[in-house]
Image 1 (cartoon, one colour):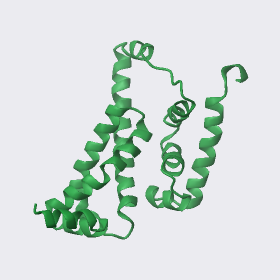
Image 2 (cartoon, rainbow, N blue to C red):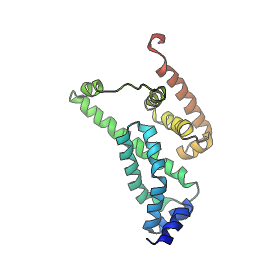
Image 3 (cartoon, one colour):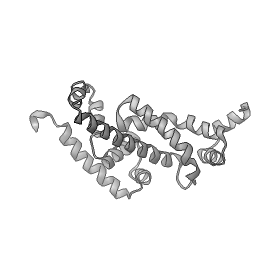
Length: 187
């Protein structure tokens, strides 16, 4: 890639890069991935809480992005569309992990893995760990609204639900988190 093409890719809007990538421009695709990789990893990490798993999810998103870019039409912001891909990849990874945990439990390994678990010393880490135990839609709503700073309307666009549904998921999540984080002696 020439220096001029690299500079152009660095400053081109996401929609323009996506259109070029959709037409087979590998440099435009590479620029999109490079521009948004940290964002992809950050969202994945907030959803799963483990660096290695977040890296796996981020790599999976990059692969999916290569196949899905043809479907991006520019109706929403590129990052809104990208959030949906990250959420879907995280859901799939969670399902895989749950299937693997069920298999491990069937072989009696689950107890050994649980004994090796770690306790979160930082209250924020404990909170995000509790968020990861919420039902999928609640976890996603909390991650998008509080972790990523999206408005309820923006989170609704990403999750393909109504704004009131996002508000309900956040409300329900707050109730569950309050119960999950209550000290043992209060329960």
